[in-house]
Length: 142
Image 1 (spheres, helix red, strand yellow):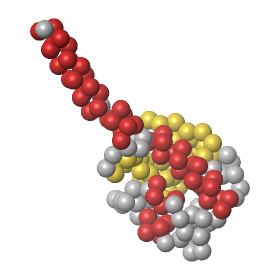
Image 2 (tube, rainbow, N blue to C red; image 1 turned 45 degrees about the horizontal axis):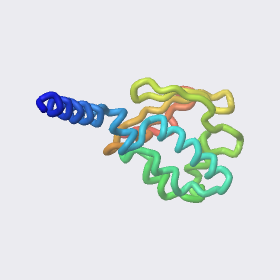
Image 3 (cartoon, rainbow, N blue to C red; image 1 turned 180 degrees about the vertical axis):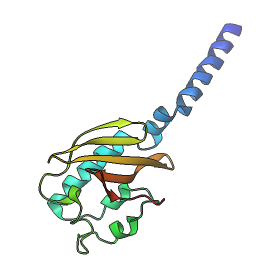
Image 4 (cartoon, helix red, strand yellow; image 1 turned 90 degrees about the vertical axis):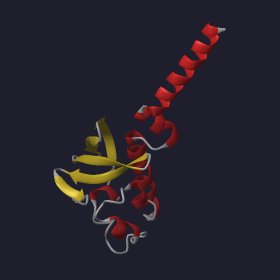
């Protein structure tokens, strides 16, 4: 009987420890960095086809400087989305990337390279800053 209780306690401790580890907990209840980048890439592809940019701002952290501009340009009318390299109809979308800590670096389908800084908002990782070829495109609040 004592072995069963000890085993049950050990299972509960291991379960709680597993949930408290960031990656496991986030993957069940939040958005990981990889999931955010993949979702952003897919939404950019959809936006390029439909010319509907209304959901793209939802990938960005609330501490991003231009988040209000993003939100208020759902059709690209103000030029915010159409002026950024990610949003052109020229195949400039993300082709490959790698994650190191909270930084993402990679290349786009054209010769451009990019880096993204990610930041948690609640349980979700959000895009906080983007550089393309070393130039800031989407900036964080300093």
